Length: 120
Picture 1 (cartoon, rainbow, N blue to C red):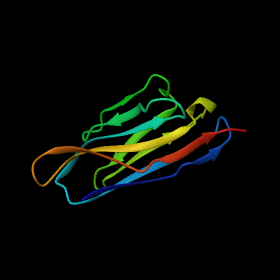
Picture 2 (tube, rainbow, N blue to C red):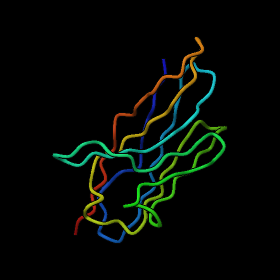
Picture 3 (cartoon, rainbow, N blue to C red):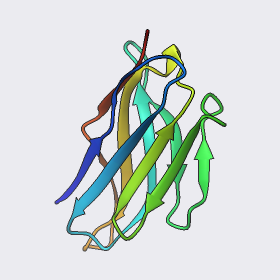
């Protein structure tokens, strides 16, 4: 079984910063791509940022220059530094990991979500 546990969400004023973390645990061989997605009320879940095991990152246009994704492969953990938060960044943020299982299959796993709210 593979588990993803997120932390770091909260309420901040517009312009503020947060650091989200997501730790992956369980029985698996390795982790390929890790990423963060978000879902605002009444909207579909959308990609925020992804990062490969080699450290290559991609971002949604709406967060480029404000958010930074990073990972610690030794700790099986991915981070999202969110700066210059805007009210439109308010959403539940979900961690995702593409995991190589002991059976040789790549499977997607999701965290439970952490609420990020930018409001004065």
